[in-house]
Length: 446
Ligand code: UD1
Ligand code: CA
Image (tube, rainbow, N blue to C red):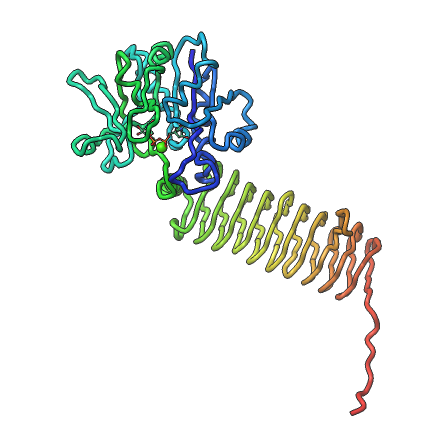
């Protein structure tokens, strides 16, 4: 049997934030989400989250997980005190308890698997992840004896100057034999510099304590402050960009760009400076993104250009060009060979093949057919103050500059609308329409 407990009750004082530490995010995912995702496939029998500081906010952020049990730690008297709170939930439980710090987000599932295997094989009371760090400041130091067993973990603040030189640190990820742990949990004392009950003090109370050193120390980096948060972000970004470079994506200025882990790229994609991909994006072969574009949860088919534009929850077809300075908003689908140009906003609309909306337009709640030319400054007036209405324009129509289409409205195919018209009734196919007051021209008196 395997139970997993994630410690997420602490305030995270060093973050200097109103947000609980475990809800800060890295490449768009919260720290606690990251910790949870590396336990997904271990098939645990239980997953328990210890919450305390802003418990409801943390709980609320995890409402999409079905299997979690929350345990309240109030007040937060340290990591040992946090684990003491599991007593009721794990009464009678026999097996392993895997304890994860909610603030160690880069951990890999394979590492946890290896830890579990090693722990079971060696029949230890506890095995925890350790790392050798060039700068171990801030971490608990691991003290081993001649036979290789761990005799204790001493927190940095409680170390002597000599002990502080030890570079072997505790990563805060433990696999305990639950029965043996529960026998010693009540023996913890708070005689230390923070007057807290330390989970690390159980090590010296347990029969057989082992550590399992990780190969890549970055994997167990704990986040206590914003600097460490930015170091982890940088690490994720560098890893992602070098991976995609190896798959045929070019970055003109990689440092100024950021990616999400859930984005996927074809080959010969060129990412220009200051371009950011967020959420789940699918970018096809030959796309050229940026400079200055932000693309979120969107699919771009092949050879799409997106210059200085925002594209959010949209699909863009082959060979379409977006921007500069376009804003494509959710639920929009732009078909192939189209052009969405300067200062154009599209919302919740379907744009057919080969249609051009080149300058200064707003198109919302609309369905546009193919090969339409939307003149500069054309606006769909979709909102009557209460409700949104749809605009339909059929194939091969043209709207003149500064047309206003008052929705709900249907413009047929092959229609031409004269510049400056405000159209509020449906227009049949093959019509020419202009709605404009007559110009009055007089000779001036003076
Ligand atoms: C802890 C370890 C340290 C280790 C480091 C690794 C202890 C005493 N020290 O130190 O040996 O090197 O992690 O990153 O465990 N938490 C609670 N309840 C509490 C206090 C903390 O749930 O009462 C949670 C926090 O939300 C956090 C985690 O436990 O997710 C770790 O707490 P933190 O205060 O950051 O411990 P460290 O000082 O980093
Ligand atoms: Ca920490």
